[in-house]
Amino acid sequence: MEDLKAPASVPRRRWLSILVYLLAACGLAALALFGFAYWQHKQEQKQPPARVTIDETAVIESVMTSNYGKYSASRKGWLYVDDNNRTYVMRVIQQAKVTDAADGDELYFLASGTGTIDDDVSVIYGVFHIRPTRPYDGGLTEVSQPVIPASSAEIKPEHVHFEALSDKLWGWVVKVADGDTSSGERSITRNVIWTARENEIAKLGEFIAAADHDPGVPCDEAKKAYDDWQVLAETDQGAAENIGPQRCEKQRWTYRTGTVNGNIPVPITVTAGGTLNGQPVEAKKWKLMFDTKSFSYNVPEELQSW
Image (tube, rainbow, N blue to C red; front, side):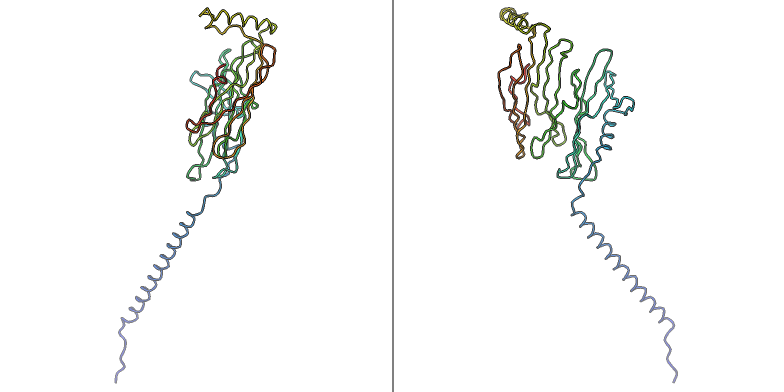
């Protein structure tokens, strides 16, 4: 009997079957890898982003250049040119980094600069809050008001106080002066309160901080001239519209913020002191309460009009 032989096509079919199995195995492996990658991606999405750290020097340089222009090494400041072609030398005079915010570091700083055209001096300042974007995407958000007019008196570091107003709210209290006692003018200084609220800079209020004048004559003479003018102003409309002669004055209104305890901004206590007509002024205090509806402090008129 003759031996039966397998057809020549059998080995080929076996290799085809092996190839099919291999391809299927590769497909399963690819599917498993894809599934693992998708699972890992979802796990990463569930993880909170790393806390943000801010390089103060780099951020300030970038923000100042963006808002004011190039830095001048010779003048030690950023050169900002306004619409009147007046050049201001802008410098950072206050900065603070808050490291315990919810998303990581937050940076607050204030810049000020003086510009001169002929003998006309003008001062501006700007307030800046740099924080992580919300929701966090790896970037930073700038909340600022770069150009705020401030008359002609230079704003120095000692004129800026950075205050904790609530558990999550910080603010600047900036002393802004009008007038120049060196030239015999009456000088009024006001405390202006600014804060960063969400995506805007908000003004929370302002109140008197100081009133200074040296009339160049003895205080009793200056007071008599002022009293005579007041009598005249009662019957003469033209005199009433005039500011009248100035008295000896060195009045001060100091402030103190309350203890932070919660989300509502603290009250601010204002105390009168100093001298008027060469005599101590009457001691008096006011308590400025925060109005959540208007998002500002209630400031009585007697602390506003001077």
